[in-house]
View 1 (cartoon, rainbow, N blue to C red):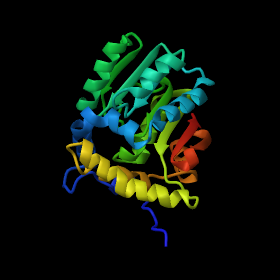
View 2: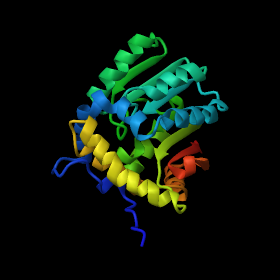
View 3: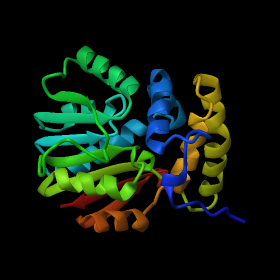
Length: 249
């Protein structure tokens, strides 16, 4: 019998603690920042780069000039944008100073500081004025939001009319036998890799639980619609291990 996933990522927390999800997520990413990039490549067999590339090819047709990348982490998506999109202004925001420090270092190494800026910000209360960006992107970060509806409302607010929200998120395959194999990998192998390569043992137990809990497919699109987005669509990749969602303001 298949175990039914939760569908409220807001209740899935990294630690057994009374701290808010926001504080726990920030603490977790500060802890795993030094191994984050290596673990991403390892856990996805390097597929995460291809998923980002596919998403940016989809975004390119909208020709965004000013882009906000929410939950930017170590900056992989903004750096890829510099190579793939003709966007002179890219802002990456994140809660974790540990992740942002690595992003800024990579930015210096690649000499991209003219195009990309990184700021510590909370996606639930952005400091940007209304209608500031042509596109907002979130790669593998939505499931970490303390309140999904508030996060989507804020992203909608800072978009220009006609602007695009693009979310790349891990998802749970449903087709046999891939679904069963993926479940075993997510629940057993990923936590084991986390224990081997990271000092934070809970972080990579939280990851598969948060993926199972995050709204997927039509459920995710309904959150887009409730925030005001139209022309919403999604595209599963790698048999549903990752999904790209797009909505237009």
